[in-house]
Image (cartoon, rainbow, N blue to C red):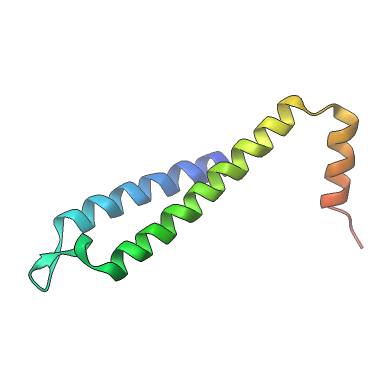
Length: 80
């Protein structure tokens, strides 16, 4: 599910970048507006953090020994 979400997020960013490069506002390309660039940069940062998290979890799943996986799983999802 996370992989599908990360892919969808990247597709959305790609479409946003295409759109702002084509659109004009106040006689200038939308991409030249600092506010728009800032918002797109924040969106890209969030997408990159999801990708990093996904790669980290995948690496742990492939390289962590099973008892350690279970220990961390129980710590993360401990019910109170």
